[in-house]
Image (tube, rainbow, N blue to C red):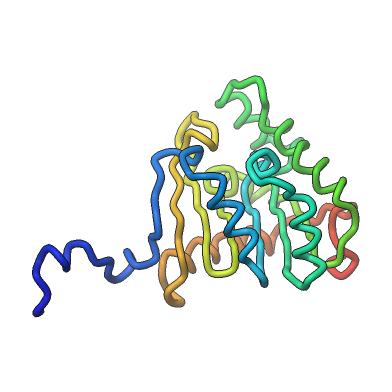
Length: 200
């Protein structure tokens, strides 16, 4: 009550506290943000983008970093769309771009295969029933931080907006999006050649 209105207007309260930054375009988020969040995570790296292909071009030495993270005890997960699924084909028709959705997924699968078998590195396809929910919202978690992209209409991921969230409690925006991703993961279909022995 004692703070001037100008100060109160600048302070984040309630759910706003979890919003670190927002970007009108995912491509406007600096690559250093992605690299730093990955580097700083120690417990949980969860890449729940439908393709996640851009990570391999945006984050330097990502395969080595993921291997090192998994070997040090960090859980590393990729939830991808099925490259042969009907939702993937539908999205390809909507986007109508040369670098198709299935090609982008296969790029990620190839990169993960090149990492090799590592305890703690897991990959799944989203279940057919969940694919529509997955393709419309990407959630990338780095311990208590998350980068979230709601995909707009016909736009590809890099042209859609992005929010950087940081957890401040159990019922905020971070937890809502994290729970969404976990629900998709729980119903996901393991990709045997990319899943660690413990997860099979």
